[in-house]
Amino acid sequence: MQKQPLPRTTKIARFCTLLIFLPLIRCIAEVFRLQHYNPTGITYGIIKPFMLGALATAITAFAMVILLFYKKHMAVIATCISTIILLFVLKFMYGTQ
Image 1 (cartoon, rainbow, N blue to C red):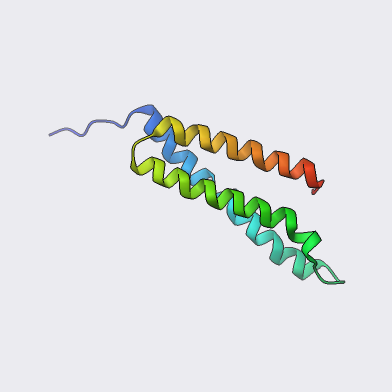
Image 2 (cartoon, one colour):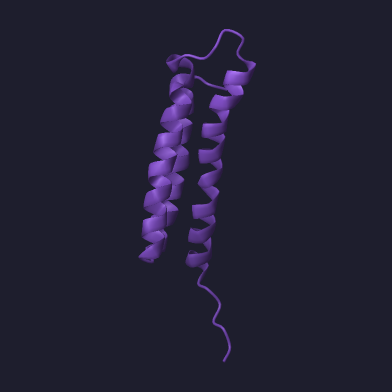
């Protein structure tokens, strides 16, 4: 029996699910980088944009995994795109590099 190839939207949805974990890891790791390189210590005001980004990304990554289980591939792709847009909005709102 020959295996059927996955539909294109399934492949893209799986890629989007993996892709969204990269900014999550980066947002969490940025706090530790700031702690190491900031001589005066870090405050809530410094890490707030990164924690908001990590929280938003974690919630949408969880939603994407649930949607992927229910085979809602177009919803996964739309959630990925909206999460990336949300992270750019947070970046420009807080003016971080």
